[in-house]
Image 1 (spheres, one colour):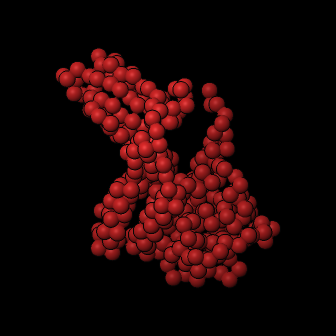
Image 2: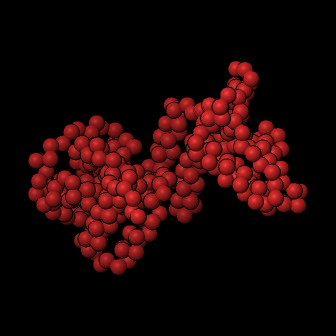
Image 3: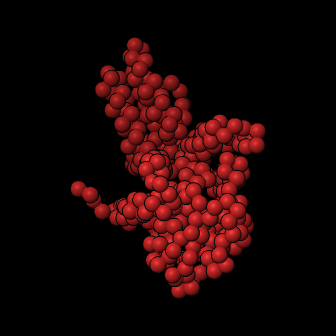
Length: 320
């Protein structure tokens, strides 16, 4: 058996009893990877290039601290042992515990600060479980994604009563030529989804777009194209935020850079984990403090999103 063909990897290590700090560091690293303990000093993981590299890093840390560590390939002796090893990574209890927490979270009876914190925690925990679900049931994962998204959508409506309610209508294909030089309207007090949608409209849909920001109770002009409010032509549909609905309607999902940006906007608007979301949100908060109105805020946001788009369009290129 070659090492590369082994279906499982194991880290075997020992450390001097006095080195509790390195032992704890190794344990935390192995736990974050989803490792299963076979016995003290022996941790198992399904084979994979990234996990091999990470186990190697843990082994190097142990060796540097005066311990002994080796990463080895493991080949189960028969089918029952293979199944026994797989069962070590059964995430069903983790999913069930998370499901209970989701059902116990009541947006209407939770103060806003606690609710926001709880939603972030639930989304992070789901991402962690999925990352360590090495033998996944994709239907189950999708169900939990949708269940948590429904909670996030309910919460968004309570945290901001003007936030549009997602509908379940099909997203029809739109012809670009019918949306040139139009007046586009959305709610005043621009934030993530509306800002990003306005950028998408101006950069990829209607370069001559004009914008009107509706105050509370204001009726949009009859010839205007509405976005991101209840009753608008383009708004939240099922799991999609308005930015993603526009991508789908105008056949822009073929652009990987726009899809990647959509994931960031989705995470900030209705919840989720995205590595770029925090930085973008910090920029927006700073710009909102500096800008005096929605027009100046959009003007400041456009070049920032241009740069995000360039970054995702050239991710395979070295920056030196």
